[in-house]
Amino acid sequence: MSWSLHIDIQRSQYRAGDTVSGSVCLVSQCAKGQEVDAGSITIEFTGKSTTAKHWPGIPNSMKLFSFRKTLFTGPRRLYAPYNLIEYTNRDNWPFMFTLPRDCSASHRDSSASPSYFNSDPNQPLPITFNDDNVQGGSCSVVYELQAVLMSPPKNGYYTNAGCIQKVEISVRRPRSIQQPNVNFNTKSATFTYRSLLLLPREDRELAHRSLTFKEKLKLKPPSTEHLPKAVFEIRMQTPSVAIIGQPLPLMLHVNYNSEASTVPPPIFHLKRVTIYLCEETSIWGFKRAGEHESTRWTKEITLQEKEFETRRPRVEEHLDLRKVMDTIVDPELTPTFKTFNIARTYSLKVFVRLECAGKDHLVFGDYKRCTLLADEYDAQTAAYNEPAPVMDDEDNDPPPPYNFVTLEAVPEYSVQTHHAGHDRNNQTG
Image (tube, rainbow, N blue to C red; front, top):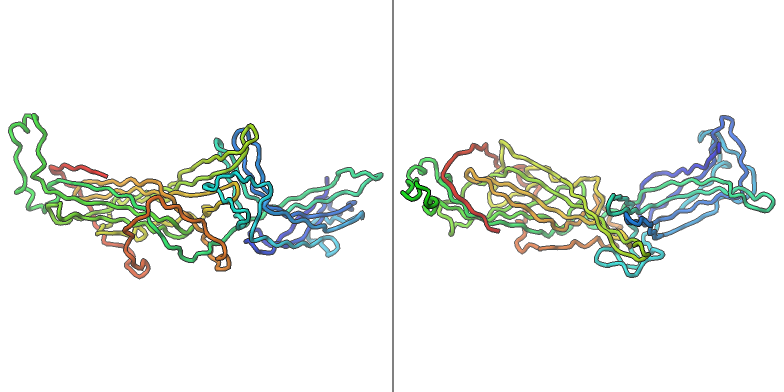
């Protein structure tokens, strides 16, 4: 076929409630142009949410909305110009649709699990989405314009000869909360550390004890009861909600137990931080027998990683990690959302390594739910509820309420050197 339909739209990204306008025209691949016999030209605007398991791979499609308009009714012979420059008002047909703010899926399965998906019969229009997993399955939310030219009937019969052209558009949804109220999940570990390095250099020799006869013969392990002792708790706090493209509010605390310790509070230095994000996709699709079931797959992402090799920030009671490293959420991530048969959620965990008196202390975080909100804010979308954050372990001791912008950019740094010494430590938690 030496000619085709062309769909021209003003932009490629839209929001719920926006007007999608453009035009449809005929374009010829012949340099002189050509004439085309047309019976009718229609355009259809649809939104679909489709899922398919890896096996048996039967697509389960839910139509979110569908609009159809007839642009031309013949039969008539139309002229298809060689390129778009030769357009005239006679050669193209304008159209206009309004993206709905709400959607109601047809063929919605009422048995879908409400814990994974949004089971409301009417809900906000979901964002454009696509995810394909080799073992789990695939899913997509697609908004599409489809123009169809039907040829006129010959001898009273339609020959089905014609042309179809499709164009996808991207639909995004701004967040309705300008600054969310952040709750925190906490991972803590308690340490008891004994070492001569907890003392000032001039006092270490005085506190040194010679080995006993049995200790020299290795009949019993060396006692550490005489060594200085430091008892402390390290707590890592991760938020239950964050905004894409903005820094994650990650709070590190060191609570020193002066009553259980035998030395004044030592200096703690931050050595390493790794931030992991786990994206989880859930779909509702067909089983082999024709029934429905849910399937989920996950992907772990290293969001940020920072090694403090020489200049190490001191941790005095608490430290906002935004001051010492980049904690920005990747702008390319998809916001948390749930629709009839697709859900995208996230979990967050942080690995922290602290150094105190020549000894490293590690805190391995657990994955906790974290709702990611869109980077764009629009107060007009406030009528819709954001996905509620799922709290695994809400912290009863939130971080100190201080303004991050007005404080100094970074805490005090130190250059570290390592010393050898007689030490013993244990960890609980």
